[in-house]
Image 1 (cartoon, rainbow, N blue to C red):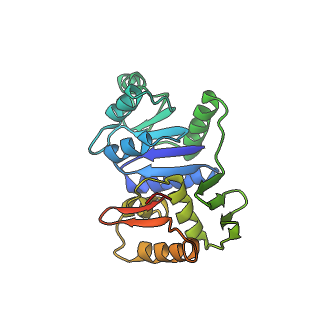
Image 2: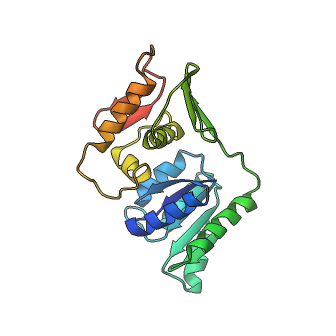
Length: 225
C-alpha cells in the first residue's frame, strides 16, 4: 500500500513511518495540514493516517475538504482526544477509523491494512518511468534507454521518490523528511551532493535532461521543457 502520514510530531512520525515501511508499505509524510492536503490532492494513495491536531489546517477540516473534492481514500484518525464525541466527530468528518493515542504500532499497522482490504484489491505500482528512464522496485533495477544504471541505496530511494512525484515540484523539506527521514535542517549540502550524483548517472550522456532544478522551490523529474 502507498500511505500518506500527516503528523506534526516529528518523533511520532518517524516511529510510525519506519514501522509502516518495515511492514512493506510505501510511505510519504507531511508535517502540517496544508502540506498534507496538497500531497493528498496529488492522488495515488491507498490510505491516509491523519493526526487531528495539526498546524495550518486541522485534521478534521483537511479530511472534510478532501471528501468534498471527491476523494474517497480510506482515512484513519490519530488523536489524544478519545471521548465518544471526539470519535464521532472524526467519523462524521469522513474518517473510516479512529485510533486514540498512545497506541501500539502493531495495532496501527493492522488497522491501516484493514482499511486497504476493506477498499478492495488495489494494483500496487512497482514500476515507474519518465520518458526512457525506467525503475523496477521489485527487481531494484534502473535503466535509461535500455542501459542499466547502478545506484547506491540512497540514490535509488531518492530517484524512487522523484519518480513517484514525477512532474511535481519536490521541495528540499520533502526530500529531507521522506528520503533521509530528517525532521530538521541538518545545515549540510547532503541533498545537493546526492542530486548532483544522481543527475550525473541518469542524465549524463543522454540527449535530454530529466532531473531539473526549480530555482527557489526544489526539484522536478520530467521530460517537459
